[in-house]
Amino acid sequence: MAEVTIRALRKMYGGLQVIHGLDLDIADGEFVVLVGPSGCGKSTLLRMIAGLEEVSAGDVMIGPRRVNNLPPSERDIAMVFQSYALYPHKTVAANMGFPLKMRGMAKGQIDARVARAAEILGLTPYLDRYPRAMSGGQRQRVAMGRAIVRDPQVFLFDEPLSNLDAKLRVQMRAEIRELHQRLKTTTVYVTHDQIEAMTMADKIVVMQGGRIEQVGAPLDLYDRPANTFVASFIGSPAMNMLPGVAEAGGVRVAGGALLPVPPAVKLAAGREVIYGIRPEHLAVGPGLSGKVAVVEPTGSETHVILRPEDGGAEVVALFRDRVAFRPGDTLALAPEAGKVHLFDKGSGVRL
Image 1 (spheres, rainbow, N blue to C red):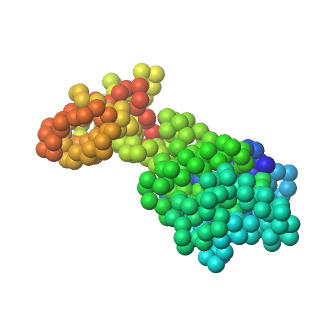
Image 2: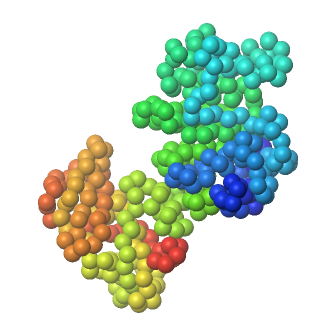
Image 3: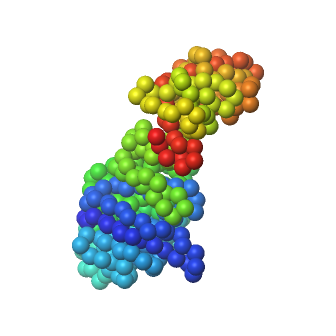
């Protein structure tokens, strides 16, 4: 196992810069998730750590070694891809043992490592099968087993669950997390799914446009997002973002409602802000009023979309108790003052 250290990292494709001087520290044994929208640079960063993309400037360190110019085979990493990348003509055992065979390892050692990885992943009954006879989840376990047998210093996962159905994704999330707890190998995991990031990570790195917006523990990012991008990206349903102007007693949002702010917050009158409130921190009461546009029951909770009659932005509320609202009903929602997030309107930075 080893720490991963990134300093002033840049990636250029001709005159186009896609990674902008990143600094990042990943501790030994840590499970770090890189998350962000498509095109934000997260997979490019992972591939630079792996050695699949050249570094234009800066340093990638794995343990004490600067690995910028080392090929992937010499970086002591193992990568799991979205596509599984299994050999269809080889059995599960042969697929898992292939990287060790390429190293010239003795057959007895290969068999022992494959057997151990298969036991960890529940693949022992399938060692003589071919990938075509296995489900997507089983194939992904084989790809993970092929990584485990190498006993690397760092695991790299590039959106490994994207090809799986929703139920299997939830199951595999838990299995990968349990695997990490068992092996304690430093892990860097890329996903565009913020739910995956929240449920799996020790630390989340939120990226946008080739830059890091915020790094922190999942609940730290959820409770104290550094800016409007992180606030809107982390959390489902997304945080409500309402433009407004500070005045005595709170913030006057577009549409005319005066909404409360946390008692400790002092805003100069007339300051333009973004008023953020998460859907679960809205309750029935005086505040934002309008007509119910959509009611979405999910079973454990109900999402209600409110369309203010005075022209303000639509608001999403989340109720964990059963509610009887119908589209067209008049409803008023009150924000919980202590849970309000305020951001500067110009920069988007948290106040």
